[in-house]
Image (cartoon, rainbow, N blue to C red; front, side, top):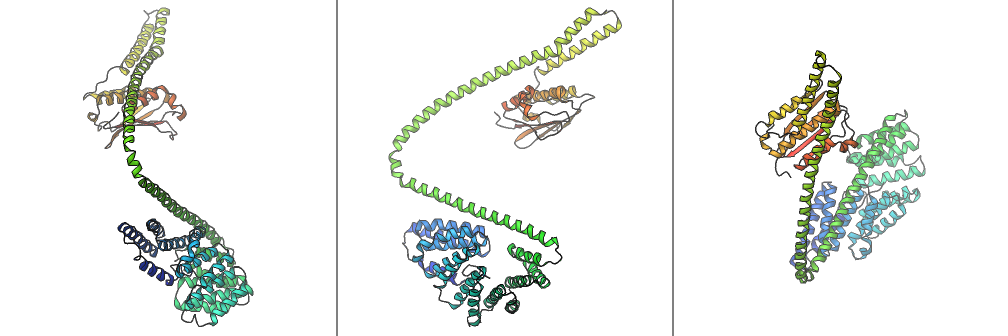
Length: 579
């Protein structure tokens, strides 16, 4: 089992050296005020980042380390930048992104000879951990060996040896791993380090049973005994997993299942879901009943971990990208400032150019304004023409044929007869009603205090036995807050919607809902008719007229394309500053 030496959650030895080195070196630079201010900001964000890291708030910590780096780059504080980058690389390892961690650490290798030994050990160890996670154990052993050559403490040296042995185990070079681990267990170095001693025994037991499946059990149990006495849940979990692996290899599935269950129960309290996944793996392997429960849990947890890891990688990649973009913008800003004298010399010409642009812009705006006014006049003419055409069409479609039929009737039937006379009266009454409706549709509209009653009369005209119109909020709607143009538009729009409904929808129920809020008036329309195809809505002249009318007073007309039955429209008018 690999021990993460020199990561901030496993050893404080190198961390203390780094912090002391940074604090003492920060006073040996220039005393320039701006330099000191930038340096102060760099250390401020670094301290915040370390605080967030200790609270396991990795995203915030990552963000603060990047901010700290941006200030240290301005002061060329390379050792502090290296410190921050190593912390960033450690965060990448924690979230399961060894590739990004390796990329960050690799950038520190060219200047490694200039670094203090504490930095060198930290860099080599982190890089070794990256290769270990990437299953490149040859490279991992190489960098662990480089780190080992620089440490002076026997305790730290033993921890690195344990990591090297773990890499050999993963390479299936169990003979070399056993040689290193037996040397560690026979020395006096681990006597005062019970947890490290237990880790060494656990690794030795694993190497032994991988070499010969009948060996290693005593070492594993001895390791578990030490760990149970120290009540370190993480280490106890590792022992249970290794014992489960041992018994699976020896096909003692009952014992394997027992230890896997114990490991699984402990892992439920861990934040690290990978440990729970590992326990589930051995529960599946040792489950004699072949229960699908653990397999299902294993698959679901595996997908969940994969998704979370990818999200974490994406989030940290975005943070890093945003900071790189920010740094590029800062670099551009510095270049702009460096050319300030040249810009100042060109100010006079720039002023002339600005005046020319201003004058030209005035002409262009004036031209555009005249064009808009001209187009507006043309739109009004076009609207008037459309209105006239509409009236002519209605007279032709609704009156001309009826008048012709009535004339024909008078010529072909004896009007003295009661039945014929009644028929003629009925036809004339129908023609009169149609003529009156056309007149009302295009007549002037009262916009005074009687507007609401006129609007109610309009609804009553279209409410029949076959079509019921339901009104909501009309009596509470304050029409006094609308100006004359808005009232006329509302009347004509509602009139147009009712005409369309009567002609095309075959609706039996129509709902008008009047509401308002702080910014706008809202009119909602719906019916249960045959509906309208969204692609054809613009081809409907009536609806096109409605939309144009609403836009002319700064409002919006929305068609609900998701409605499956009938149609729904929403009209919104601003209370103030409409166009």
